[in-house]
Image 1 (cartoon, rainbow, N blue to C red):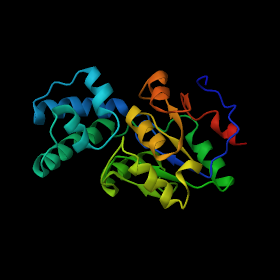
Image 2 (spheres, one colour):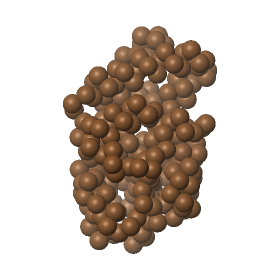
Image 3 (tube, rainbow, N blue to C red):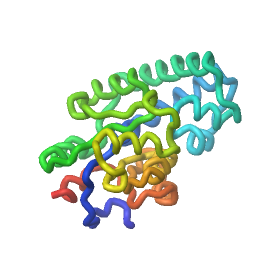
Image 4 (cartoon, rainbow, N blue to C red):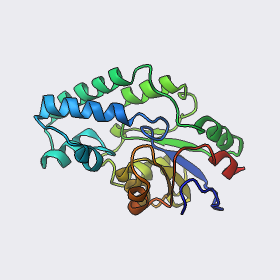
Length: 225
């Protein structure tokens, strides 16, 4: 389907939102933090290709496994997580803005009685950091965080749990993702996926299982209306 098109008659029973790259276009901060901390802690020099294909989408331990071929031990998981996420917050502080059209979209969902949930690989600290920066804390009372699942994206578990927490069948839910692994997770759970091109190119998102790719949420309030 054409990017940005809204001629899509299906209406969801609920909506599942990723955070990074969906609520806010903050991927550049994460990528810089990954490059810096991977060099410092893992001794790896990450290329743009590495960032595109191995880093975007998923929890840190699973990303480290993709990069090194070995699942990290608990000590490395903790050391890397603290360094990388702390660096991310330093880089992002005072610079985060919501993706265009998000607040209006959430207003329309609320007005129509359509529940929604956060489904993110981020930990509690980063989620609270992001919600405070964007002023969205009161909006997302239902959440699935990285520590809530045993298998992160691209496994479908995060979106299965997100639908469950809304009391819905995943097949009745619309999911918004920006990363290829996130799209695979949502599509694998049975959700219909409308992806945002804030992080990944349209073609890659569609090939991963998205039904549609859009630049932001500016047209989605009208779609629901």
